[in-house]
Image (cartoon, rainbow, N blue to C red; front, side, top):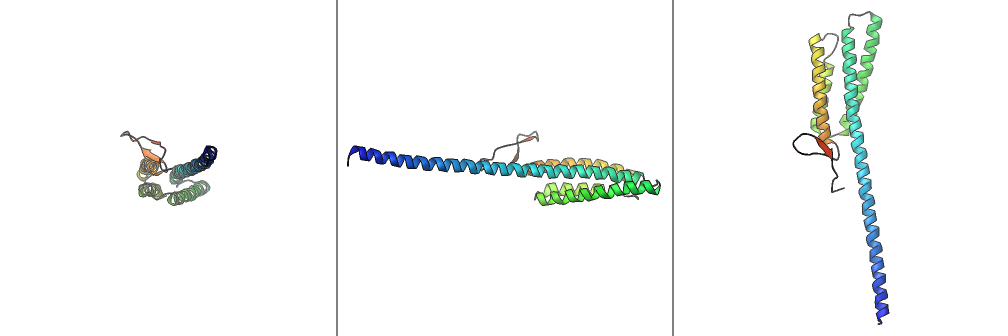
Length: 173
C-alpha cells in the first residue's frame, strides 16, 4: 500500500471519529441543558406553590379574625365577612392540597399542617387570646415551613453554617 492511501484512511477514520465525538458531546450538552431547565421549572413551580399557600393562609387568618371580630355585628355585616372567611378558607385548602401534592418532604408537610391547625382554631366561639395566639403561631409556623421547603426544593443545598443557602449546579445534571 502506498503512503497516500494509508494517510487517506487515517484522515477518513479521524474525520469519522471527530464527527462522532462532536455529535456525542453536543447531545450530552443538550441533554444536560434540558435537565437543568426542567429542574429549574420544577423548582420555580414548587416555590410558587409554597408562596401561594403562605399567602392564602395569611389571607384566611385575617378573614377568620375579621369574622370573629364581627360576630356581634348585624346580620348583613356578619354574612359578608363570613362569606369572605369561607372563600379564603377554600382557597387556603386548595393551596394546602397543592402543596401536599408537590412535595414528599415530611418537615414541610408537618409545618404546613401546623399552620392550618393554628388558623382553624379561630371561630365565633374562640376567645380573643386564641385569635391573637393564632396569628403568632401561624407566622412562626409559616417561617418554619418556608425554611423546610427551601431545603426540600430541587437544586437547593445549604452552604456554611449561617443557615443561608444558594442554588448550586448539580454535577449529575
